[in-house]
Image (cartoon, rainbow, N blue to C red; front, side, top):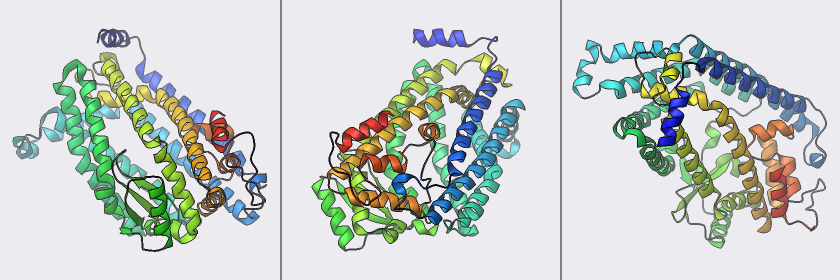
Length: 463
C-alpha cells in the first residue's frame, strides 16, 4: 500500500498536462493504426494469387476477396476517423462534466422523487444514469455506420441475411440486455469501491472474476437464445463422428447444437462453451458451416477447437485475463483520487468514481495497445498449436481443405502485411497456417522433415 500511496502522490501533480497527454496519445495511436491499415490496403490491391494458393483459389474468387478487403478498409478508415473525431470532441469540449451535470439534475429532480424513495439516489444511481445515457448516445451516433456495414457493405458481397426489422430488433435486445446486466453489475462495482477503502482493488478483482464465470455460464443458456435459435444436431454421420472424437479425447461433451447463423450472415464458424475442466461443454456449429463443408472437414475444424481445450488454452487465457485485471484495478487505485486528473477534465468540485474510471482508461490506452499486441502473439501461437494437434490426429488434408474453404466462403484476406497482421490479427494468416502443417499447392501434404508440426508452429509464433 505504501507503494500505491507514493505513486498516487507523485502522479497527482498540477504540472502534468493530463488532457494534452491523452489527446496526444490518442492521435498518435490513430495515426499509427491508420498507417498499418494503409500498408494492408497496398497488399489488398495486389492481383497475383499467393503462390501457395494458386491451385486452390481461382482468380475471380481472389479478386472478390481483395475487393471485399478494400471495401472494409475504406469503411474502417471512415468509421475510425469518425470515432477519433468524436473522442476528441468529447475530451476537448468537456462533454463528461456537462453530461454529469445534466444527468445529476435528472436524478435530483422532483420527477425522480419516487425512485429516490426506493433507494435509487446518490452517486451510484447518478453514475448508472450517466453511463447509460452516454452509451445510448454512442449507439445512436453509430447507427448509420452499423446500417451501412450490414445493408451495403455486407450486402454487396452476399453476406448479409438480416432484414432491417431484425437488425433493429437486435439493437433493442442489445440495449435491454445491457440494462439488465449493466445495472446490477455496475451498482455492485461502484458499491465495492465505496465500501472497501484503499484495498478496493482486491475485492473488485474477485468480484469481476465471479462475474466472468457467471457470464460464461449464462451465455449459452440465456444470452445466445435471445438472439439465435439453437437446435440439437441431427442424428447422422456428423454427430457420430463428433461424439467419437470427443470420447477419444476425453472431452466432457454435454450437447451438440446447431445455431441458425444464416439468419443474419453467410459467414461460418464453430465453437464450444462451458466452464473450464472438469465442467461439461457444449459444441456449437453454425448451420452455414454444416451446409458448406463435408463431414470430415467439420470434424477437422472441431479437432482444432478441441485441441485448444486439450492443451488448456482456454484456462491459460482466463489466467492471463485475471492477471491483467488485477494489474488494471491495482493501477486504478493509484488514480482514483487524482485531483489533477479530475481538474484537467472539468471536475474541480466533484470526483465521481465512474468518471475517474473512464479517465483512467483514457490514460491506460497506450498500455492497452501493447497488451493487445502481446495477446495477439500469444493467441497466434495457440492457433498454430491447435492446428498441429489436428494434424497429429490425422486430419492434415481435411484441416487444410477446411481452412481454404472457410477462407473462400468468408472472403477473408488471402495475404497480409506482416506488421499489420502482427498488430491486428489474433490468428495467423492462411498461408502461414498451411505452411505450418506442410500443405502444398498440389493438394498434397509435404513429407516429414526434421521439424514436427508443433515445432514449426512454435517457430512461426516467434516470428
